[in-house]
Length: 257
Image (cartoon, rainbow, N blue to C red):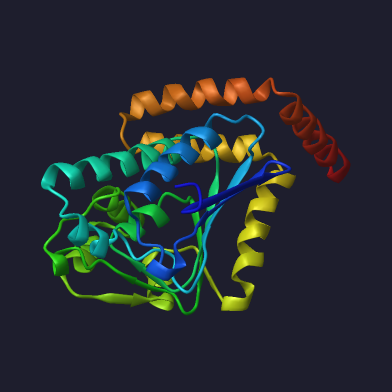
């Protein structure tokens, strides 16, 4: 289980790497359990300020491991439980205060879309491809795809992707808002790390709270979101780094006038 997803943490930067390249990083039960374990570990670690999500091999994630499902003869209960395990990890990451950037290469299919959209900022290789393919094997969306996909690209486009045998290239994914940037394959890792380093070198706590407010706010009332915003900005205004930044901004403004 430990090798299916690799984890390293260095100087506040965590790197989570899908590591089943021979299976195009398709997710089996062990990988799902490892995903949940890492999500709990990183989101409870105060020393982690940013997360990079990437993958070994030619593909980011080909979704669920259909071959393993067929070989194991998974029942509906088995598939449901596997999905629930993965969902716990997705829920934990998405609603956390850890900003996540994904570096996406090659194919992203089925549940891989949901895992990718766990990230708050997605950098894709110009060779990346995005496809649903759930219905091609008689299955329905999971891993948050029915919620995270329309949140990213809108309901109509999400339905186009889910209800047609449609493959998006990287340029179209950028146009649709599925990814934030498209870069050459050789620049992918460096660009994703630059995004994460930008958070760490600035007020990564503030970026993390901004991410949390947006993600959590999607499922709450406007009044609840306003109350959370007030609490959060009040707490941040008392933080030492925020006080320093506010003072520096005020001093710079006085010089300009």
